[in-house]
Image 1 (cartoon, rainbow, N blue to C red):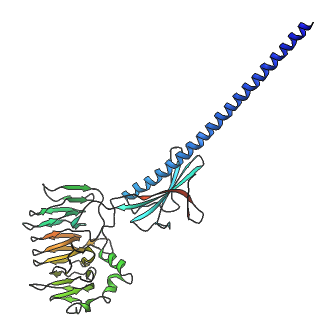
Image 2 (image 1 turned 90 degrees about the vertical axis):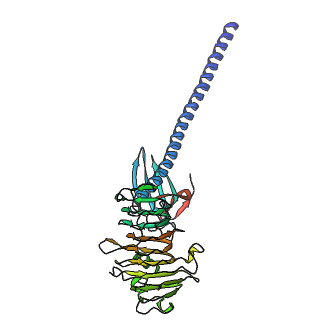
Image 3 (image 1 turned 135 degrees about the vertical axis):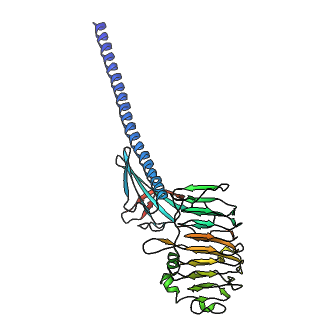
Length: 404
């Protein structure tokens, strides 16, 4: 009897042990299942979190590429949304202070928000425009640039948005750049390093430059608010037909007719001399002879002299003098047609740049490029400019830095 009772106790103990073991195993399996499910959910969230950042960065790259093709077609606030893969990004441009819409074409902030399955991440990237290559001693913006002299010397690059023709044998120490779909040689040429780009370079007009420098009225304002009286001798009637010394300042002329030994001397000791030739769209030709500046361009580019030509007649660079200056004749009329002309009928040496709608060099001119005295208003491409930050855009448009 005692033996049977002991056997029953042992069997009961075994059953309890098995039940406890099964309970432990069930608990472990349940824990493993919960852990696996939690891990899978966490991995899914982390994947969405990483993917949303990838999409935000894709949005910023998309915008830089878009601006590089056409800087006048930005995505403005509140932005453009593009679906990509399992999510989307929304991207827009802003000025460097965060204000919208973006107006400064030189630099900007790109905001990009990536969204995947309800997970959102936003980045802010500083971007700027990078100029296309070219150290231009000469640039013709819309017309053929023709060189008929027997031995002109160009120390720098030559560029054009249209056709370029050499009817002489110029020496060019730099490269030839053809920018735009219609740019190329007019005739057969060889021996010059030549580069092509489908995008033309757009330069500011003389009127635009004047409006930026003189917001009160640009060229019109300059007609009565200039430094003509400070010239030696004073300029009367906006006319020069004799030798004159121009000191630092802004001078406005409507008639320039210099011949023989008569010339303009730039006294830029105290700062740059800016000579404006108008009126805008006028038909007269400025027959110009210039002398070297008191402070050469190579010694101090900040005191460089500028000759801005707003007339259709343009400017004729005569004589054999040396001149330190930018000669600039880029204009557009009310209908958008370009005009502006530079030619030479002597053998001058120009330390600076010649940029116009068309450049026609007939003598044995020498042009030495030293530095960029003016830049186009288009850029070769837009790219990263030393700032990448994650955060969020607040309801009032302000930015709060910080990630996850």
